Image 1: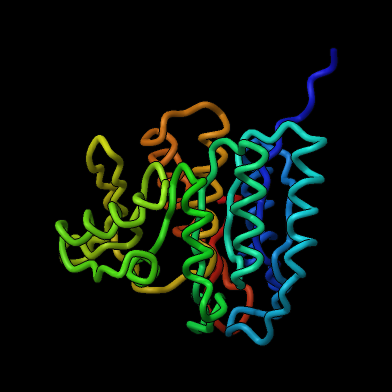
Image 2: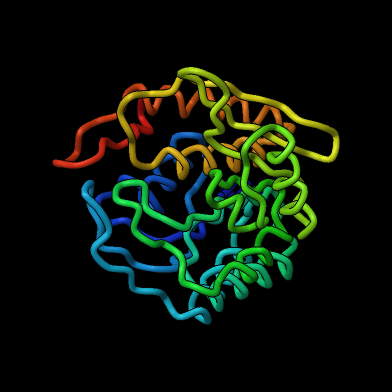
Length: 261
């Protein structure tokens, strides 16, 4: 019997500059040894200076893409990124539950890193929580964590409280990204029902585009390889650090992480 190539299902929007979204996710998955299957949730017109337009894909089409992949491919993991709307998020949550998806990482994208433009439709938060419910790891930044949990993260105590609120939806673990840990230091904090792990990193003076997409996709790939959660995060953090340090100038705006660094 022939072995099928292992796939990672990438559920996200396109980004016309290739610096985030499905373009970057596909590059990361390929780099880490997986076939990059995809389900497109929206088409965005954007470049290094900002988002110009968002055109959502019909929710039923999002569902059919997911069904097409799971019905035919060996899916080792799934990464969920930008969903945009309520109906698409509900379809994604139901489809992943129906297929018994494993190693699901949800990066709840709500704004663009380049210009802060909205990347989530108003009124979609409850539906986002339905995706969190089928996720092994949810990876919000502090603003996204506040939106999902209703808790403003100010210290370690409120960080844990926000994470637990998100985990009450059914999520197995939460990684709060870019928490201010001290002068010149940020931390990604992973919270599970067994405790807390902190991954520190130097605060960079220049912003980059695509770091969250790259990190969450790398974690999903590492989980798909059979790694335990904290090992998967540690490996992904090292990879993301290299990609950010090796960032490239692709236009007149924000720099882009380099998945080949």
